[in-house]
Image (tube, rainbow, N blue to C red):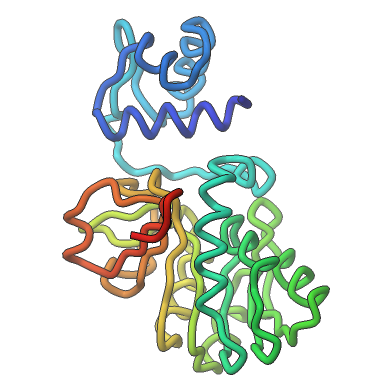
Amino acid sequence: MMFEERAAKILEVVKNRHTAGIGELAAALGTSESTVRRDLIELDRRGQLKRVRGGAAETDNPVVTGEYDVQTKAGIHADLKQRIAKYAAATIHSDDLVYIDAGTTTLTMIPYIQAPGAVFVTNGFSHAKALTQRGYVVYVTGGRLKLTTEAIVGDSAVRSIEKYNFTKCFMGTNGIDEKRGFTTPDIDEALIKEAAIQHSYISYVLADSSKFRMVSSVTFAKISSACIITDRIPDERYKKWTVIKAVESGGTK
């Protein structure tokens, strides 16, 4: 297991339990305590948790301001992303005009899409290429290419999205919180996500369960603005605020 995969698991355990011991984390990861100690040092340095005697605790700053690049994120919870993406792709029909947000989970959808007449708009560089290679009609937003997320951002991208009336849109997110809503670290990407949701009849947010109770720098939509497709629901209270489809290993819940 690579560091970023271990880091994601460590942060999930600490977030769910508020504190976690080194032995507990080592058992959860199936690795040695010395490896966990090194990981905690790095995560503490990044400000993502706080090292305490014998383990780790949630940081005093609950807002996560950074994010990994596309290559790193693609390897985190890859199996969960496959299940989420396959379910999401099945909701697209041949008469749909679809917006697909840049992101690793939304990119994972593309091989599963079976809707010959559907038309797509995206701000994802890799998404546009993959959709075109599958024979779909694809429109790309204008703007500036952000290499870390391979997303096209900026005022031009927002203005081009505002011309459309999408039947469906599929969004990624860095955090889901009942009060802060859906959040992302980048204001430029937040503005694009916000515009796409506002111009879509139905909006879906694709996120694995580690994103719940996470808050990033910028809110782009209220939690009630979109249906969430995830692998499991970590807290049943979220069902009060929006529709959630949990694509568990044994089937959809």
